[in-house]
Image 1 (cartoon, one colour):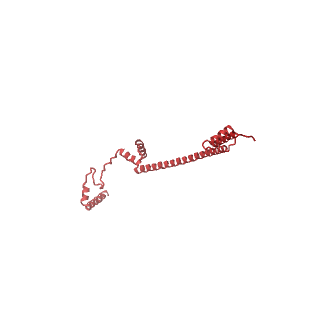
Image 2 (tube, rainbow, N blue to C red):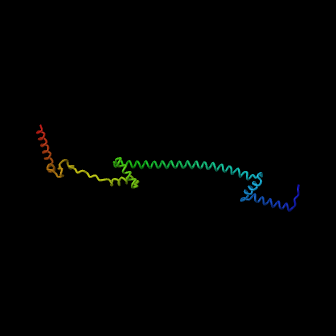
Image 3 (cartoon, one colour):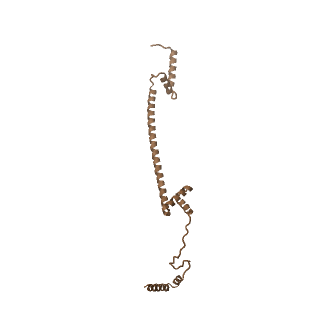
Length: 192
């Protein structure tokens, strides 16, 4: 075996301590190992081999996780979109039902419905009941035709004044009934 002097031995021990401090250092140890591997590619460094395998496995796991995460996110988004669409459809159906019920209750024709919808769009009115009130106030008022006779049978003349027959009835209903009966009998005999 070759002999080395004390000075060389001391230098080798310093070099070994320096190498060990770099190799074991948590901050730069892996970088030091990678530097050795770059300079000596055939060097056996189990930590780097394990790290490479772990990184390879980690990247495969990360890729799989991203795929699963993306798939789950898409499914959740689709589910939420579908639920929102269902809620929107239900709200539209409820609104349409409310609108139809109000239109039927107020007796609007198809043309009236169209005009009501146009008013709602033009004025930005969301509530059909509110729009119906505004719509109805905008319509021309129909004046009722004057009655030719009162509800007190036919005892009021067309000019709105009480006639004599009504006054007789009010004075003595029994006598008026008898007179009317006798007049009807007399008219019936004349016809025969």
